[in-house]
Image 1 (cartoon, rainbow, N blue to C red):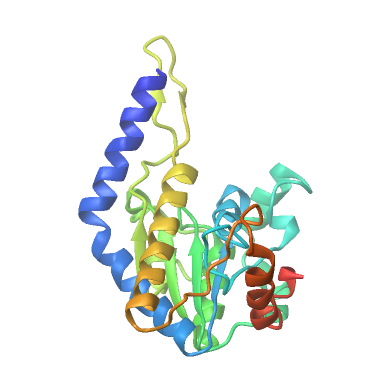
Image 2 (image 1 turned 60 degrees about the horizontal axis):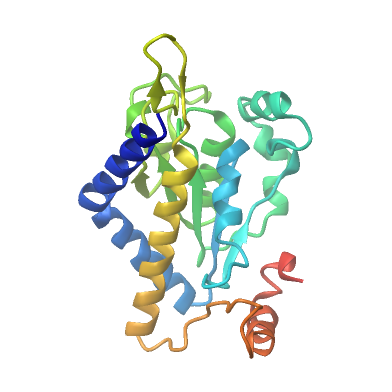
Amino acid sequence: MMSMYIQQIRKLLDRIEQEGAEAIRRGADKIASAIENGGIVQIFGCGHSHILGEEVFYRAGGLAPVRVIFHEPLMLHEGAVTSSQIERKNDYVDSFIEQEEIRPEDVVIVASTSGKNPVPIDVALSAKEKGAYVIGLTSSAYANEPSRHKSGKRLWEVVDLVLDNYVEKGDAMIQHPSSSIRYGSASTVIGATIIHSLMIEVTNRLIENGYNPPPVFISGNVEGADEHNQKLVEKYQERIPLLS
């Protein structure tokens, strides 16, 4: 079954490379322009989707102007079932989104594989109201699923650009012949690949546009990294306090 899982992941990655590359390039253009004009990338997700923001935040080899919108009740460590229930609440976003500084020059990425729950949709809507360009990382497999948002809209309908992870409904790739239960989640593996691919394309554009060296963190285990990284922290800490 391990080999089957890896094969299924490989198929999804091949599909993203073949069918999703243009959307990733378009997103990279927007993010590179945002960074060149003083903006940052902000990433939001509920439950396991928030991991995708952490994956590229303060990361060796990763861009410095990346901020994650953390809201702990929507993560897992304060209560896993509770976080899922909160994600389904209309207007819950009002309890935290105004505390998040989102500017018109920013790009906001909202990750939600189903794209049907109110909180990610409301974060996307709020970011657009503030003038930011909004990217939705979601799955087209859910494109026609009923929305839980009071507007009836799904994430793909309210963002400026969709990055499709192509993950099937249920987010489970494997089924044993003797069981009706499917298992082997794919969205984190695929989502991490998409978001790293996006950031790599952004970095390439910055270099090609003369923004060189690009604002990329170096591993703290490499000589000279501390001084290099501290300059980036000082540059972006006002916008990204968690770099402290």
